[in-house]
Image 1 (cartoon, one colour):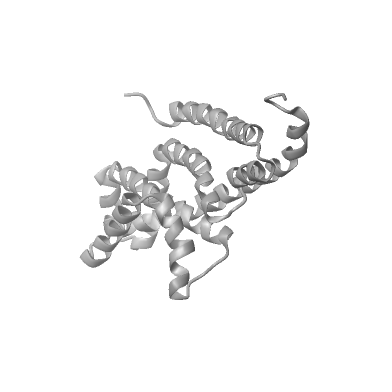
Image 2: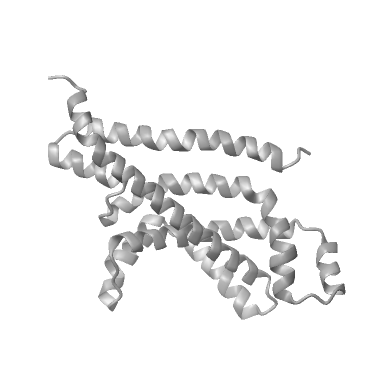
Length: 219
């Protein structure tokens, strides 16, 4: 009996490919959520209302301080006890997005803190509304230098999406585990899944590294 079976690979690859495409979709939607929620949390940290800024800080600390797997289990297995239940896919996407929003919030905050004080003073001198100051002046300038960091988080999110297989989502890892269980062969599906993850993460890492050299000036 051969250790590696090419015929078996040909048989299971379409299902793995569908799982791979679902992984890409999950990553994209969750990343959009993380960017939006993370930006809101970062802005709230700078609002001079102690209750609001403290709540935003607590959110970031709580989410960063608990494992993604635990958060997924709470959302999928625990919340139904309180009458809050959703399908696995939207649950997984939201959990992944909210988890990474805590990290993107800190990245945004770092970018905002690096802005020269003169930018704030100029906006104040022109009597610009707070919303316009943030989204026309502060955010555009803060985002540019942190794009490479956000890109690295995107790659991490792509790989961490495998955790969602634990709540029955048949993304790439979930599909490979299901195939292994059905056929009692794990070598081929797990290996192919690993290669597909690598095929995306490795070139993206190289691309982000080049982007970082162009966007972030050397000191």
